[in-house]
Amino acid sequence: MAFQVTLQPSGHSFEGFEDETLLASALEAGLHLPYGCRNGACGACKGKVLEGDFDHGPAQDHALTAEERAAGLALMCCAKPRSDLVVECREAAAEGDIPVKTLPARVQKLAKLAPDVMLMQLKLPANERLQFLAGQYVEFLLKDGKRRAFSIANAPQDDEFIELHVRLVPGGQFTGHVFGAMKERDIVRIEGPHGSFHLQELSQKPIILLAGGTGFAPIKAIVEHTIHNKIARPMTLYWGSRDRTGLYLPELPQRWAAAHPHIRYVPVLSEPAAADAWTGRTGLAHQAVLEDHADLSAFQVYACGAPAMIEAAKRDFCARGLPAEEFFADVFSFAPQ
Image (cartoon, rainbow, N blue to C red; front, side, top):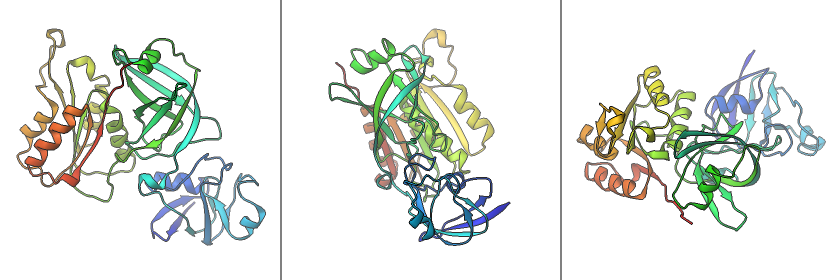
């Protein structure tokens, strides 16, 4: 049975179900409620039910005391509605609303997507979840005190694992370890989420997504987030690489474009090899955007890649009318040994 759940003070509402937690239903509706463990242990998702009847579910006593239960408080990750509800709780609308955590993680999977790109899946402890916005990143905390940052490639609703796309940097201490000695089931320490690069969901402007190499990772998270939340703003993805191997998940954006009429995919190679048998666009990815758009004043741009690409894209796009405040970027820089 479905019930109407209204959040205060925002006034946002969503459909809740008697066999699904309030948190799960809210996330499914694209509303960012704060949470931590998703199993009733931490209390981060606590809210107050102002009207209606509900089941507390398996909320643990140390996270929700008897006094709090009597006062109408509930854990959104455990509670299920039995009627229409009005719930007072905080919503995470921006990166500052989400707590940064330091967590151990187990390397669940290592798989080469290209000779120099490794897919890494991280498994968090059973009682932990990392809440984040699509496009944000985590940092590895290394034993020597250094940090290495990588964008999260999965969308927030798919948070069982943290997916990263790690490019092998010549002379890179950490990436050399990932491609060499690191093994599945190794334990690492991460901190996150970090970063202000994420979709501005209140806008209705058409979107240009610009990715260079593994800059595809946060772009992938953003696209999958929009698909999951049925955000149908017109969206064109330009993914640039030197050769065909750099487009290391080529079928994925092709599937997005085939299944969703509002999504267009433009792969671009700057130096295709003869063996690539490339018949698509060539040159620089940001130049392909300029070739397709004489006026960018009505767009938002989300760009992720090397500093030179980001600098050139912002300069040239703004010269074509893009408002500077509508250019959102995540700059990938590398730390050689």
